Image (cartoon, rainbow, N blue to C red; front, side, top):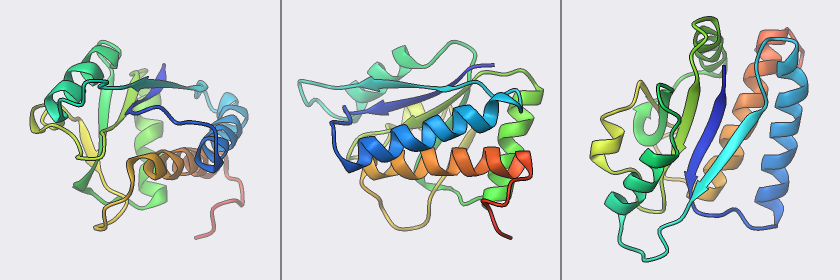
Length: 155
């Protein structure tokens, strides 16, 4: 199994980058014993600023072939953390690669979004796409702790 985050934009040094790195490191340590690999991050950037369609093309090239696609989108399902953990475990148990896709400031192109195996949202509010990376990294770590039976997540 392989897990990747494919995202539009480059996360520069700063608090968001530090938090993403910290949560992904925690995930790697916790996930190892659960059969979950370290998470790779693939960043794409539309340097010409030509919009969602161009970003979708770059993201499509970055997505590993055959991976289950989880798109982060404000219109997506709003799973609980335990539900999210169960879905991660199900992908692992199917030995299916997994790719989380985060669009740019304008979101994801509808054609790319239509390819999703699962669309999720972190609430009805719109979040800056760089902050969504932090939130996703934390939820991935939380999912690993739930699967490991750790007290990090409190029900």
